[in-house]
Length: 278
Length: 162
Image (cartoon, rainbow over all chains, first blue to last red; front, side, top):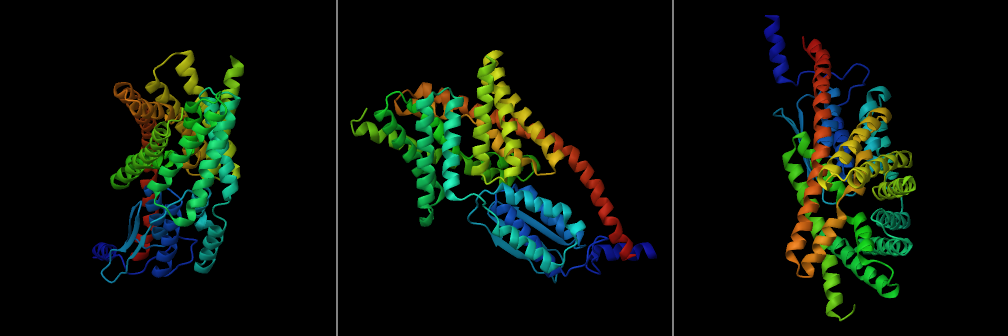
């Protein structure tokens, strides 16, 4: 019976993988390699888990490998093969940073690779080239951006020109200290703790030097660049996509970061009063 | 009054652009997310100050506006939604409530402090709720289309196997 034979072949799933029309076929190892690269870039630049899984699955399936499966949490990517002779790959992500530009470009790749129709070497080369262009803004730009963000947020809460200047100084100094500390590879908790500490000290000093500066406005403005808005948003979007595991861990991450900043700031303010300073 | 809103928009715009730079966003989308952030903040202060709506609902509605505009921009410019949404949400994050709550608790006013912290947590929840609603509804629409497309993809495979 022809129909039965068809079903059998579909179930085994490993007879002859067929790429989509317009795509040159690739071996399974090459497809896994490229899919793993895409996943790594996305997860390391702070994309949602569902986006990582979706991109990798699309890539594998459009080359006809329906037996490849992806499991992804914020700390690990597993690309597994369902067939008994298959290999699987694991990538452990320890350090994540944020790079919206890389997310956008990988997204563009995953929408357009069918039209571009690259070979394995070309695609690998494209990805490597894009990786070299990641993190376009250097540390000085980031410090100034943190300062401006703090200052503008302080103005939104109703500060005046003194608060603007103080908040700019505070945000700038806190981010600069973080960037200087980067070589020691502190854990995220200590990073945020020290940011909170510096914010507390600098705002109090500003208030001491120029009493017109309000501590509250400056501190809230300068806290803003360090609050985990990204982790929070991606966590909620992960929940909505049904990835409960990664949603939980991202929300927990956000709560931990917020808590560590608060602890740092509270420590600075309490220590200031212990010293008998106003 | 108008001047007040214009300056508020300007500062929210600048703050959002600065946060976009902090998140390493490319230059061509910075101003778009800045506009979204400014609009979200304007909606928030109009609701909160002019119409004196509670902070929870104001946050929720402002977040819905931000998420909807980001979804529309994402469809127009063919970029991921989160690229626009993540910097634009930032001005709404309740930093002031968190700071005040912590300050009260440090100064031994635990009841004021817990009230302020609870308000901040509720605001954060309302932001989460806004993102959830918009992205959930739009994802449901998109998933239906995706399933149809996946069936299209599977067709050539079956054909070859026969």
